[in-house]
Image 1 (cartoon, rainbow, N blue to C red):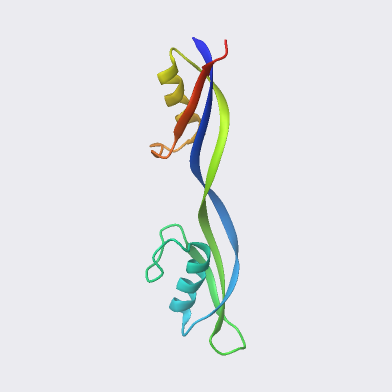
Image 2 (image 1 turned 90 degrees about the vertical axis):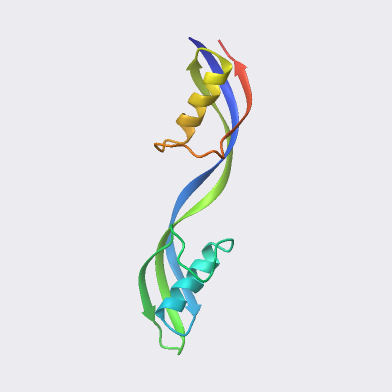
Length: 118
């Protein structure tokens, strides 16, 4: 088997936890307001799959809530990885599985360049 260096671009999820202070009419609206701050591109009127409110606590000021959360935030990632493969096409596929270690890797992985190293 030959060794290939694969330069790639992709998107990965990063875990994020924290606390947001928001103004809302109730606990449900407070959760949606905190979610909208962290995931502005998602629908603001329904729960987002990766957003998990841990606690929603009313503060002393009327209509103000503190929302503790756990979520996943998508990030653009680029890099290089070396893999052993029979040819360049298989090297790109192996690189995809090495970067995305999920059972079914997403289609956002793009091999920009595949170069034989050894």
